[in-house]
Length: 117
Image (cartoon, rainbow, N blue to C red):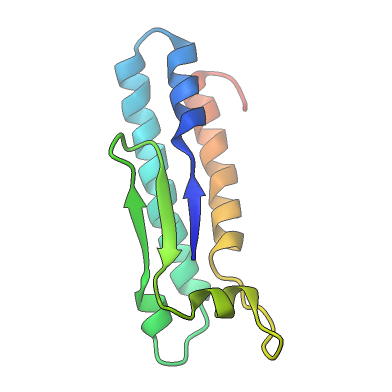
């Protein structure tokens, strides 16, 4: 079960700015990495805990260019907990945090670009 930050929009922003693309890319990478790590921490904080295994499998993988990431829980039952089943109510722990952190990241990227996004 994963949520992803697609790097194509960040890359497009960097190229659209034209000047100082290396500096803008470095700043954007900081925002993306912080968003990824914050999503993991937030998801771990609200993840339902029985044995702690599910929470311990939440992690992040960054794209090689540093401008995208996947956050996921790799326990084989993660999607059942998150989305629920016919016998168990959903207990979302990834998407609510991801959605919140992405909003903050978009604002930060807008500051880097010099215009609100």
